[in-house]
Image (cartoon, rainbow, N blue to C red; front, top):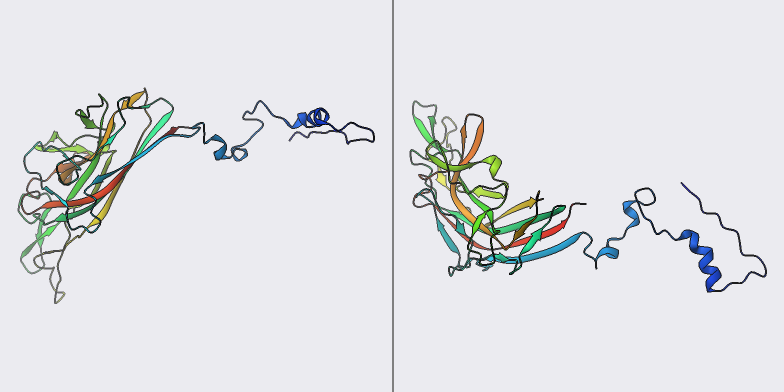
Length: 295
C-alpha cells in the first residue's frame, strides 16, 4: 500500500494553524473510491442523518390485541368458491392496515421493500376425516380392515395485499409474486407454489392415535387442541420500475391443502375440510416494513 512521508519539525520552524494544516494536508482524502478505502472504513452512524441505507421504516399493530386471549376474531372455514380473503381486523369489523398517506411510499429502482408480519392464531376443530377431503387418507391397518388417517397437510394461509392505486385504500390486490388462490386448477381453486412469495402457512389440525397392543395400526384419530401460537411471514420486492404504495395489509384464506398436477405443485382450497366445525381464531400481531438501498 502507499506510504505518506513527511519531514520532522526542525528548530526554528513556525508552528501555527497554517503550518499545521499544511503538514497534515497529505492525510486529507477527498476522492474516496474503490481503490483507497474499504467497507470497514465507514461508521454507519456517520450516514444516519442522510438516510444513506435505511430510507423508511414503519410498523402497525394488526388484529385484536388481547394478550390474554380472552377475546378473539373467528374465521370460518371457507367452503363457497371462489372465496374472498379475510382481512385481519380488530374484532369490531375494522381492518387493521398500514397506510402510507396521501402521497404514498415510492419504491424506486435500486431500492428494496421488505415487509414482516406476525399474528397469534389458533386453528379450531377438524373436518379432515370426511371422505372427499384432500387430507383424508384410507389405508389397510394390518388386520384385514382399514383406517382413515389425516395427511396433516391442511393449512391456513396468511399473505400480503397492497393498494397501488390511491390513498382511499379500496383497491387491494396481492403483492408482486403472490396470487389470491382463485385460479381454477382441476375443478379446485388455488395457486401454484411459485406464486406464493408473500405467504405464511400454519397447520389446520393436529390428530393422534394410540395403538394399545402394538399389533395393528392405530384406530380412530383423536383431534388435539392447538391452542394459540404464532405465525410469521416475510416478503421483499426490488422493483424493475418505480412503484408507489398507498397501503399494506395481511389477509387470511383457508383451509388449503397441497395439490399436484403434472410437475406443478399447488395450494388449493379443501372445501370439505373447511366445513363445520373447522375455523380459525386469531388475536393480535404486528406488521412492519423497511425500505432501503440495494447497495
